[in-house]
Image (cartoon, rainbow, N blue to C red; front, side, top):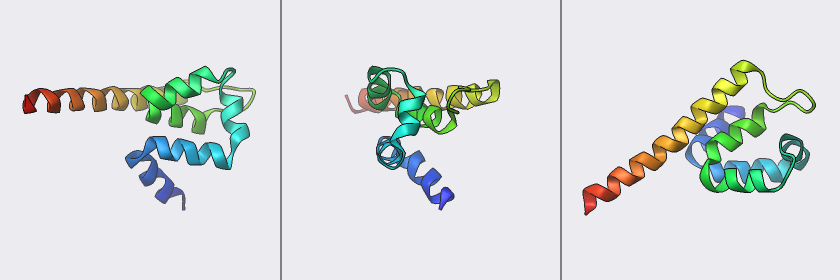
Length: 92
């Protein structure tokens, strides 16, 4: 079941984040101190936000290697933006 969630999260990170929040709302609440960060992450960096929430440990935060995974996810989000911009310029 975990492999299916990973594949689903890679294809639809916003929906996966929403499903994870509905299944475990306390995990998302523990990861963020305010409501603004998860909303901004949901809109602009959905994969990075999902990875951050999945790796966050209550009371401990993230270790060095976990931050590396979050950074890779953020790079993939930014790469997605760049690919979309390139597609738009090719059409014009």
